[in-house]
Length: 85
Image (tube, rainbow, N blue to C red; front, side):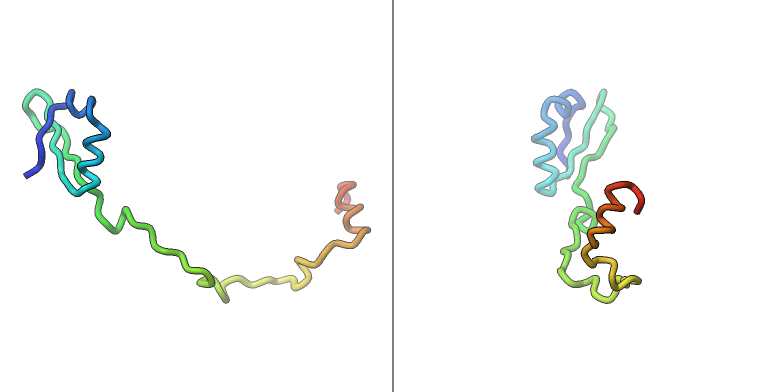
C-alpha cells in the first residue's frame, strides 16, 4: 500500500520523499482529499546504464588516409599558421 501525503507536506519534505522512492516505496500525493500524483521508483532498465568495455569498437572505424596522423612538416605548419592550409 503506497504512503499517502498532502501536497503541502510533499513540498516541505521533497528530499525525504525522494529517498523513500529510491528505496522502492511508492507515495501518493493528495490535494483536497483527492489523489493528484503517484511517485514511484523508475523501472530498473531505465535507471541503469550499460557498462562500457574497452575495445568494443574494434573494426568499426576505418581510416581512409593512412598519413592523416603523421606529424606536419615545417612548411605545412607555416602555411597553417598563416591561414593558407
